[in-house]
Image (cartoon, rainbow, N blue to C red; front, side):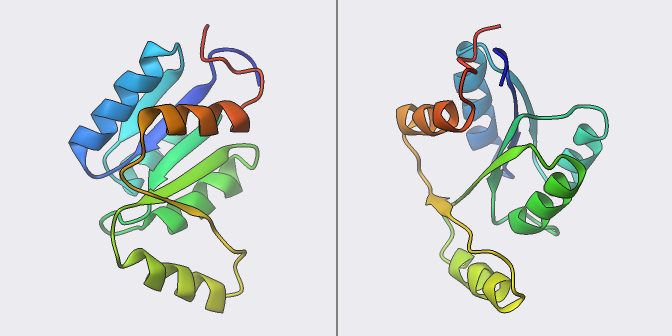
Length: 130
């Protein structure tokens, strides 16, 4: 992955989305954020992310459904799912019953240093510096 990787942040909590945007922009990543899956779908129509950080519990289309849309359009895009909502386990169970692969979902809140380490591991060579 080249330096200056593109990161998409999808979270309906504006404070969380803006905080993550600032953290990754400060490291030199190219960042865009969306407050819903539907807004994110419009955004990716002309902007291909290298990695997406997606909240699972979104209004209307949930983060798991959005991940499926994203990966059908950009199969090389890495996805980090996260949630601080107790109902996430129900979505995971439903996903397993539908024969989908086992998903890992990171628990919110995530310490920024930990999230930066995860992203660095998923985007080798992408230091975030352009």
